[in-house]
Image 1 (spheres, rainbow, N blue to C red):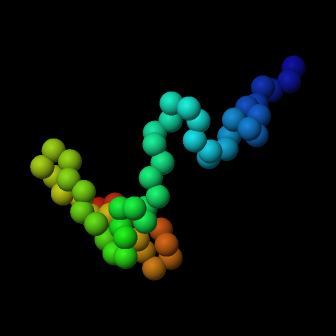
Image 2 (cartoon, rainbow, N blue to C red):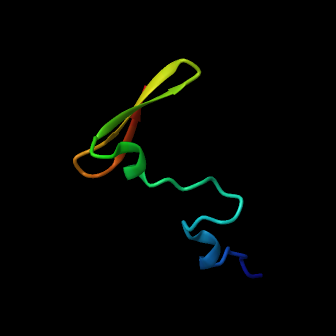
Image 3 (tube, rainbow, N blue to C red):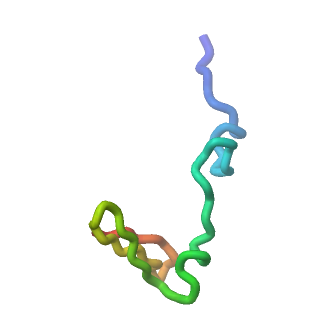
Length: 58
């Protein structure tokens, strides 16, 4: 009996048709390191860390 594994092609991070749109963060942030997003009246802070990671905080 052999195990069925998804092919490497299926495991890529490349967008597929029907996936969520990809937005370059530079379009949102510009020269800033932090922006605010609002959803249902709740404000969230999205920031770029010193190590170039994204952190979302309520």
